[in-house]
Image (cartoon, rainbow, N blue to C red):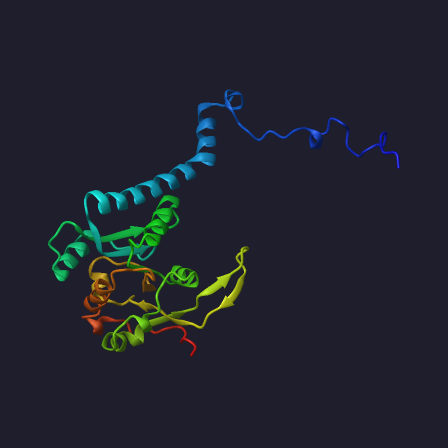
Length: 254
């Protein structure tokens, strides 16, 4: 078939046949106003810069404390979104006294994270992946999402018998899943006790803890197991303060 002179539905100079140039160099922005340039920068570069800055700060802090300041993480708790803690400094001071920590090189870190803020979300992910977070205190929806990803440890294999029995009425179950490259769930593991409902805990409220449905979970990659268990013991000293509604919404499968 001779297609040399075949007509097409598009003219020869149609945009489809033109070389695409998505770059926006100096020649393209020179005609924009200052406000338009600022808007372009915000839309295309600001999130990337903030994320990079958060990662650099988090990693830089870890490198500095581990190599130069020789500091080490003794215990770290992350409070997420609505599970916000107002008096973080007082809790850190109280825990230093409780643990008997006197060295400035042993770090007790209590920090709030707002995952709707891109930089804060990146910082949380970085700190978690570098084993700089031991305990996560968060709303139930965040807990469920993170448990699905395998972020938390199964408490039934972590807690000693006496502490397990003391907290049994407050456990919250969740299921970890596996997904394919497109995010589709390919396997769901049996539910397990990954969380503790501390919504009614008196000590949590005493230090300005907020939120109506607050779950505590332990990071799977924590290396501070002893500090975590002692923290849970301290937190549950006033076990009578736990809300009667603090019961798991589901039981793990056996």
